[in-house]
View 1 (tube, rainbow, N blue to C red):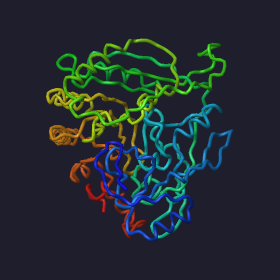
View 2: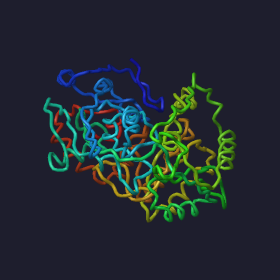
View 3: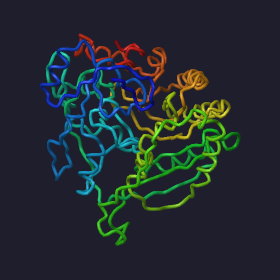
View 4: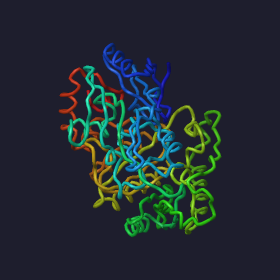
Length: 438
């Protein structure tokens, strides 16, 4: 069957196995030269693609939950959406969540996902107690901070290249309501935005939308959105059951948009309207639109057309962030290759060996895949490398080996662990071959 990532590029012919038991997984691994595990396919490029794919979607059972501590054990194919549906009404929430809830727990570990609270709570791995994993020789091992420690940290952020995650145990956080106390602060340029981030580090959640086509004194103008889980006292008597919310309205994009719909003019108009729509104010919002605004539009990736698109996401160390972001935003503005989605977040320290976050600022931008945008990415790669940054493997579809090696200084350690635990090179993706992990 034809398989692709969320960016609709590349499209590959693959044999997809969908086991429902661990014995099935063992049989598939023993009978296959190489493969990669895959969940809901929300990685943008080729990191979960191979000509043989092991889908975890039928390994989707919640196994145990401790109401006193919030400790949850579930199989790798359970989605964040399923966890939210089951546990928000009981007063529990995810410790870390990306911008979509349509991610599996196995994918969350493999990508070591981050959210709007990384500067406070770290990545997903920071909340994982242990996980069970099937190695290439059929052995099942338990990995934690005290058992198979090297494999634990190589797997968190290791993009599925160490084995197949079968189940994981991690902590949920206690909440009183399903609402977020939100504050919006408009920033006139990138300097002001970074100042606001620094001044508001005590907020648990922070993210900024950026107009990446703004120029001059308005370069990097943005809206900073802050959030905290609202308490019962804060929401008052307005909501009879503050842990229950209405299912949000959702629409679906029924077909791939023509390529000409997205151009410099339409993106510029969209960014101007969006910036004007933000007002500096405080409010209470349900958790869905705060964390997952794009999930309300199903198949929104079709907006970019059949040519496909990518999310170019990078992080720059804090000491270089201001200069680096200005240089990059200026180059993007000059190119005219704007982005509908341009999201800035503050990171804390790195966790896993190949985890993407490092202390600094990360910017994620969506671009249609054209020759002009690909040329721009090559320029941006050099700028990011110059400032000591790196690209996010979960979003990548075209990074070169030398850029990867410069950005991920712990790569030799990862390679040594992979050689030791996967000597047959059983777990590989198209991306891993492209960037030299073979």
